[in-house]
Length: 378
Image 1 (cartoon, rainbow, N blue to C red):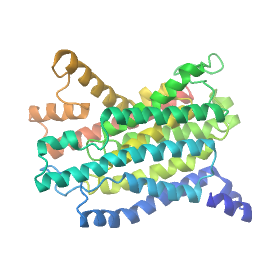
Image 2: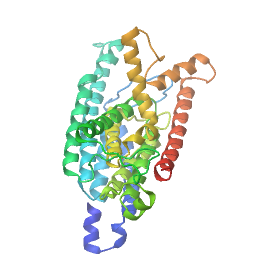
Image 3: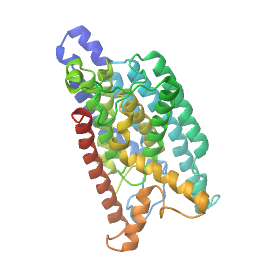
Image 4: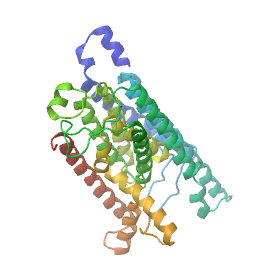
């Protein structure tokens, strides 16, 4: 917003470049986060706002999740660098509301941890009472908010019209169209599933961060080329007017996540929490809808979908057989327990690091594969 105001009064063409705005947003968000994280951490430690208990594989005590600070940094950067349109507004609405839902759980976890420390709540009961919103109500809120935004976006954003892109198919030969009654549930579930998937993945330090960055890079690249008529015609991909305004917003989120990695690299000094992961997941989900790449989500965001599906399988299988399909869900805990039992990977800290690095590498490979698949293999 500010950059547009300055451009109109100075006519400096550089300020009209979306690539420049995106780079500026990324650097600004990263700088703000690097400057704000230390005092934020000190403030939370001073008042004992920790959401977790200290463990043997975590030498330093984690503090209150950083999701609210994420939201503040992204909002400030948006005011400075983003040009507002319907895509930006819809993305911010999802991001804000989902972050608030996650923040309720984060606050409740801090409150219930204090109850454990005071002896009014047992540690065994903590995991069942930590959530401020029950899983059922939380999922209902995800779906309701996603549904409202989906309907409004479908009605008021011209390019949200039910058309989608499919892997291995060119829009010249086949440009599938989903009718309203099918596209709205598809859009709603995409947002809700990503919100849950990122939340489930955020179990180890940095585990959800790199897959989030690779997913954002994918939709960012698609937004950039899709908004250009020449490139979209050459690459045989949908031409979506106005999508380029999302680029600085995506850059702001990536910049914030890079700074978060700086402080969350094991052993972490701060955690993402539900306020960060749920808001981030919802935001990524709606970006896949905007770019018409929802059917690429199982490839690009495979890690998040794997974590989400593993929880569904575990719950469903246990209800049917009273047995566990995985050693523990989400699936990264299954790998953790399996590696611990093998005795070949050192202590808990080394095992977590091994799992995280493998997930990160897989995320980067999936990003490269997805971009090639979307842009050239048609």
